[in-house]
Image (cartoon, rainbow, N blue to C red):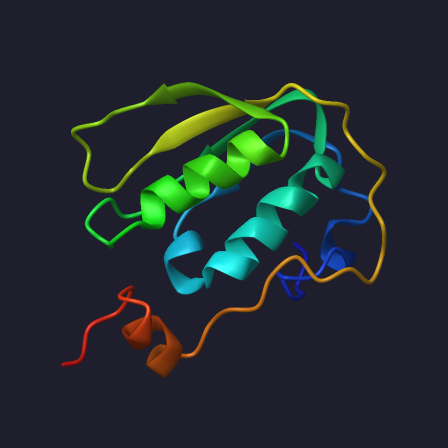
Length: 125
């Protein structure tokens, strides 16, 4: 078992590259900038033709589309999604070259609750 900061590349040293990467329950807690930064860094965690299975709540305004566009910007092709699923489970495949994993890189920071409320990804109550 590895204990570490999932938003940093360091815990993945020795474990990457992976054939399958799971990103479930992460994107709804990130700003658009951190969604972009995380997806941009994924080729460091993936082997050639890796599959990334991810979720993004379709009821959060713009979240699913933002994540999907980020995957397309950084060399991933959609392979499966269920458009009727409110949880937004999807699978993308890396079609660009994987990159070597660099230590001490920041992939993302979880946003605080006030930021998530402001951008419509959390509710007051």
